[in-house]
Amino acid sequence: MNGLRYQGPFGEEWISGSYLKNFGIIVIVNLFLNPNKIYRNYISLILIIILFLAIFISGEKMALILFSFFIILFFTINFKNNIRHIIILSGLFLLVVSFINFNNIEDFDGNTTKSEKLSYRYSTQFSEILGFSKNSNVILIDTVHGTHFLTAFEIFKKNPIVGSGIKTFRTECANVEPNLLQTYGVGEGRAINNRCTSHPHNFVLEILSETGIIGFVSYIIFVLFILFSFKWRIGINSEKYYSYLYSFLFFIFPIATSGSFFNNYNSIILWIIISFLFFNKNVKMRRKKS
Image 1 (cartoon, rainbow, N blue to C red):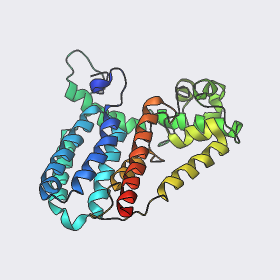
Image 2 (image 1 turned 180 degrees about the vertical axis):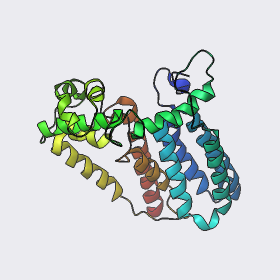
Image 3 (image 1 turned 90 degrees about the vertical axis):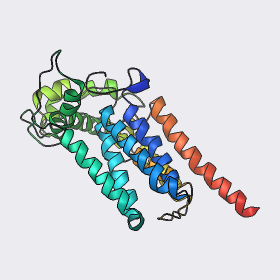
Image 4 (image 1 turned 60 degrees about the vertical axis):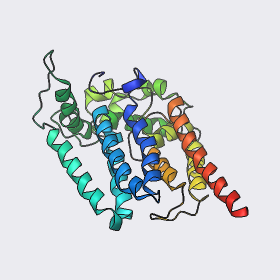
């Protein structure tokens, strides 16, 4: 455990939760779309429970939120045949919530257990990130991530057409005046200390600030091209590549906090998902021709 998170086999990188979320979605949907009832009714459910608990333990809040959102969306679409799944998963959610102690201690010492640290991350720290704390003046704005977002927006305003350049947020952030961020409601301390980091922690704002309108429009065209390249059918009898659509959408989710879009790890994940999307499409087309 590094700080308040478990990084698993990834060393110093805090990506275990997002890794499980990205590839877990693909595996779950493929299992659930399997005509074999054992895979659909039992193995997929067991895997969902394991992944949900593993992502929870990883301490990655956004990965847990997106994975939970995926579960709700997926089983809502297939509601009639999944009442048992919904009941069990609702019970699992309540179990996890009951684990969280909302009256956590804020000062850790040598006697603080890992479960207490994890509970603190999902209660007190999560409230602070959203701005629901005595240290924040404006909800969502006067927070660490809110400061990053506003800094990226100010960088974009300075370079609206072509942006400041890929991976330049870490240097350009220092050129954003703290008092400019304070006009949005960011506290003085956050404006000074939290405006700079390696990236703005949101794909859309990173692309806007570093590549400008030209890069952003290119990104939108890229996403739309992928989405309109397939005839999506919602339901149990969906095409096999449907599972990769879920993973793709929850990877690029526009309002979520995220890693860097131009990071090697994120690029690898994105292109793996896209590659399998088109690979499955081409396999299906060849089968039709034969």
